[in-house]
Image 1 (spheres, rainbow, N blue to C red):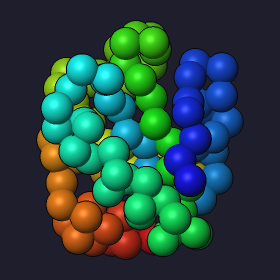
Image 2 (image 1 turned 90 degrees about the vertical axis):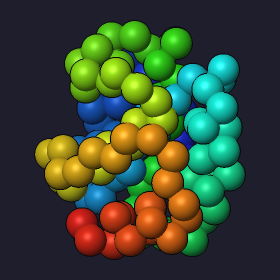
Image 3 (image 1 turned 135 degrees about the vertical axis):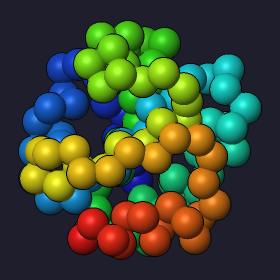
Amino acid sequence: MSEELNAGNFHEFIKKGVVVVDFFAEWCGPCKQLGPIFDDLSKEMTDVKFGKVNTEDNPTLAKEYEVRSIPYILIFKDGKQVKEIIGFQSKEALKKEIESVE
């Protein structure tokens, strides 16, 4: 399952391993479409951590990572940002992007 992230737990969460973070907002249509796909992948890919950041509730994190459009997915490896994906992705496309980092 994916974990709700905020300024208090974000940096600790991304420190180790491959971590996928979805920056989203409740009002965002494409974010709502991506939600179930993100949840499915979090259950399937047990060796990867998944987290979600609500940009409305966490504007400082959104600013820190220069989130300009959502959905905005960042992939980290051992705390270092290695990939960014902007906009809606199919399950297959997103899984392929994540696997390319592992």
